[in-house]
Image (cartoon, rainbow, N blue to C red):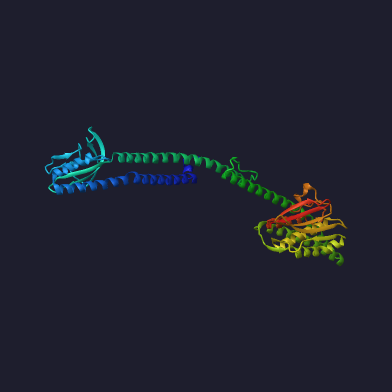
Length: 451
């Protein structure tokens, strides 16, 4: 991954946004610390200086210069907290009283924050102090202040921390962003490689899993399931196309033969017979295409929970519809449905599914056999079962009989091989499951609908 692609990376942009938020929160935190640790104490110091200076000005105004000097000396002698500083300068510039070595020679603003030289402790020291510069009546200049060296050190520490913190945040954030971008880009590249392989026509390509079961692994696993589904659908389409070609070949050949014979004869009886044969083949083709279209519509549409379906009358109607065909083969039909049993689904689709299963059972069950239709509630779901005592379906073929045009008994078996395919598509449309079991003897087909 080059620098240009890294700068376009969403991960890096998100990292920069996070850095900005982190730096902002860091600045707010330091600002709050500054307010609590420096600004507010400085405000309190200025308030104390204002009280002292106002008191000293009052002493000077009332009792004169000497009383002021004695008050300044008492202020230094009785100090118990911050070191008190003062300078009293006469109108001529002579120092009258002071415990500072230097101060601003020219008066500027009223409040001064300055590093003063002092001998208050007996030795020359440099201390940060805040002082109030006041002009007294008669031209005397009075500076009254308090030591704020501790606040100055705290302020320097905060600004130093801010400088280092901001610098480290930028460096570590950029480094972390590049590392994260590289790691995420590698994971995304695996997905892109699999997608490009599929676009190129290799449907067997899959996204390599990292093994960490993180969000990317879960996404990759989901994409792999989707790709497997696509591969299966494409393979199914290919098989269906081949099957359609095989299934259409025979009826089209017969239809063509009937039409050729029809065009070559003048015998009215033979013309009618050939026409009837051609119409039968056309009807067979039409039925096949209608079944295929029905399956395609079911598979392409969204799942539908449907509405409440009362099973008792529906299953009785389906059984009654197929009773004549069963009577012709001497088969016994039985039904076992508790009253009031209902499921969520599409009534027409449920009827079509049951009807197809009964039709299959009647076709494949020998004369004199038995067919049973039952429904029940099981663990919050509703199951509909159609069982017969015919030849059944071998276990290895039970998944294939759901494919279109697959006929368990070979191409000589009755029907198109679309009945169970339609049932499977209708079940999937309604969120139901379909399973084929051994009825010992015969086949049992169970449709399970969610409660």
